[in-house]
View (cartoon, rainbow, N blue to C red):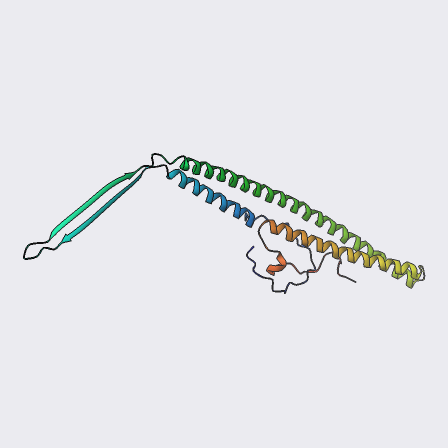
Length: 222
């Protein structure tokens, strides 16, 4: 993901992730490695096939031989053309081609498997993200109900219409609802980070772009 370290300055999160992360078309390191392996195997296959083809070469040279006395030097020009053909190698070249083809098939299958695994991981991460979103909404609704119930019990207690036990029960339910909302908020952020990982992205908390606005429906209100 291009993140060499964590500087330890991640701010506490008080709001949900928000929108479902969009796929930016990035591949994970596993898929990139499989793509590189396939490219390397294809290059080896092409090189193995080229070894069966004739090889042509050309060579040339010029030489000047000095002669004693007052005679002009002798210039010698040379030009050579050649072709190299491997008529028989005991099956080594064919075996090399077969091995390269097999390696290419294996590399292509590994790439396909990596892409399928990535797709499955993304679908599972999206499903988990939506599940945590719904859990947070349910916990938030429960907190709103607990807040309203606690207000009613406080008023009834001041008016002498309810006992201290009823008030304490309402306050305990309110505390449990707040804890449940915090837990579901953490679960939602974990699902968001897991989903971004399948896109090859770091968590928002590491990039400094995570939302820090107040939660909705009085989730942080006493």
